[in-house]
Image (cartoon, rainbow, N blue to C red; front, side, top):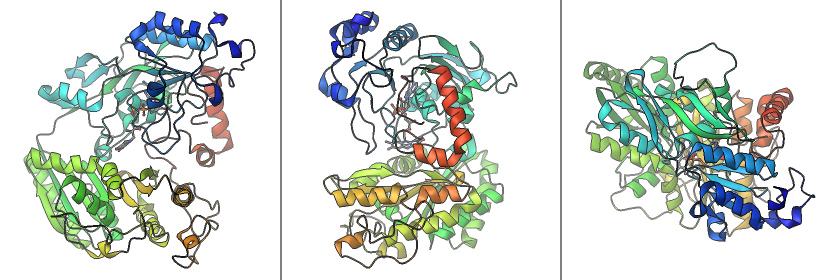
Length: 541
Ligand SMILES: Cc1cc2nc3c(=O)[nH]c(=O)nc-3n(C[C@H](O)[C@H](O)[C@H](O)COP(=O)(O)OP(=O)(O)OC[C@H]3O[C@@H](n4cnc5c(N)ncnc54)[C@H](O)[C@@H]3O)c2cc1C
């Protein structure tokens, strides 16, 4: 079998260094033939354009193409691929829909990208047990379309139409998580092909219980493992009954603080809100433009309530009281399904609405989550930082016809591509979407400075350094210390990622978050399952 390897690596490769970036695209012909023998010739590609498509996700991380892409059609083929690659020291990179935002699919050491999207069957639906078993190519929208007539639905809804197993791999969440939980709460069992090709059922073959005290929680270990421990080839998911009635709402606030205070008060009042999403005024403006909404431009909450007609009336009344108490205004209720879909489609398109504010720019999304009691503190500070860095403001952008009238926030000046803030605030999770001109190195530095948190103690990285706007002579350096969002989140007992994962860029932050012993324990688990370090190398740890 060793003669299947590229000649240049014969006898020389170490299990880490087999595929340096300089030698990508040069798997030996024999190895490629072996891949074809497993999945069939039409399901293997070494074409540069295909490899490039699979070398990046939706993030800013540089494209790092794999050496080959394969599309298995069943779990046996996945097992054989894993055994072949592992036996030959070839890295394996699982690929879902490529919508990740942390560079999880970049082939940093080359290797074989296993695109699982052609395994797209819904294997088993058990309505009476509220569960379904899906293959890795099934996306969240495809599942909900399939469930349409059975009175059940799957609520975890990242903005992209991601694959459900990719969502399990990243521990994804979405707008419904405040009520229905994240992937961590909604995965009951996983079928996983381990690096050497063995098949594992994390909760036992065919099991679909809601609770168990049997041994270690292997399902929990694989949810959020980002392809570094094995390939998820089927997921058993928990379904929920479609609510009898649904109503959505938007309302505007005079300040960010008022919007966040309302969120906290609604949760404290035990209103079982299904969705509660925050958009700052710049994001609200962007969504108006992109999705042809006509919302008032101000810090805004999008809300949704699920229940019986009677329960909804009560939830809505209590929520209105809280919001009015916090100075909220411009209520708009959406009862019809079409109106609601329009609203949530706009929310799910927030990333693209941001990108459309400054055509040609790339988006960089931060993703922190803090205990709910610290949410207003971090959001208000982050907004101030965006302003101090002149990363906010939309007044200089041409206003779209029919776009909502501006509130106080919309009057901010714009000095460059605006940063937007949007978040699943009911969970304490929010994102700053920074727009960066890829041709402008200073712009890139500035975004990096913001997102990579220069100041460990929160005291370095002041605006006015090389990365700040002040470097262009456009303003005086800020005097106050600048603590950037992820480290600030850690300081507030939060996490550096609420839902996008660690991927390539947040490994140092993971260490700071879980500590040396936590990191060492994760490394030991990885080494046990993947002793040769070939499963999606370079990610998470
Ligand atoms: C517009 C937009 C909005 C988004 N909104 C949200 C949001 O609200 N919440 C949220 O959580 N995320 C969000 N995301 C990020 C992204 O959609 C999620 O991270 C999603 O879970 C990725 O799924 P995927 O199928 O695209 O995985 P990919 O991007 O293909 O892969 C992501 C990671 O999972 C691994 N992986 C994929 N499939 C498997 C598998 N079968 N077995 C093992 N490992 C696997 C990959 O190796 C990689 O490390 C958004 C992205 C975009 C572009």
